[in-house]
Length: 271
Image 1: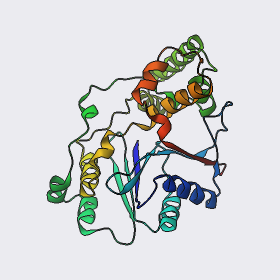
Image 2: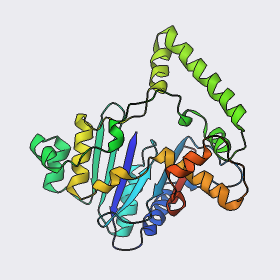
Image 3: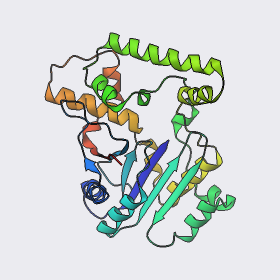
């Protein structure tokens, strides 16, 4: 799922990360660092996100994972900053959610939320170039538990072990696809690409909401997974300049060369 949060800012974008962490604490979330020397704890409920290093047209931008940021956290952060917030999500089947935190949404945004075709057509920005690329079917790294994924990113699982692990998991999932039933449907979803359909009804509404507030640049921000992986690798290289790069590491780092300029926002809770 594609998820972005925008909060109007007048000053330093880092204030947005601070406000979200404080709001998460108030909702009984515990901030944690998944990029330390040891793998972080695994939480059944978590906020996983990064704040962009600079504002976009006067809005602070947050790139979030597929874990929905709770509305209570967003509302609290926006209130503490005395600012409006726009929360956008779009899943792989084109379902969009557009939430406005500052009283009633502006009229044009209300029309976009309702799917008014004229307003959507007038406001929508072009789909990102990546939407034109052919999707690739693969078992995503997000299918791994958090501690395993963290160990893989930090090099605590070597390339050979990783290949065996992914092969085993992919084989198990592919086997379920051939069996049929509910397990097969779940397996198919796991093997589906995470490619977002920006031409779907939901995709067009999200692009219209982005265009309404002059946030078209947000579509060129890095994907959460690419940013997370690049951040972990750049952080490891900063701690240990002579750290060994495993196959694919250099490409992951090059995908988001300025990853360390983003501010991690990670917090979890047990229940």
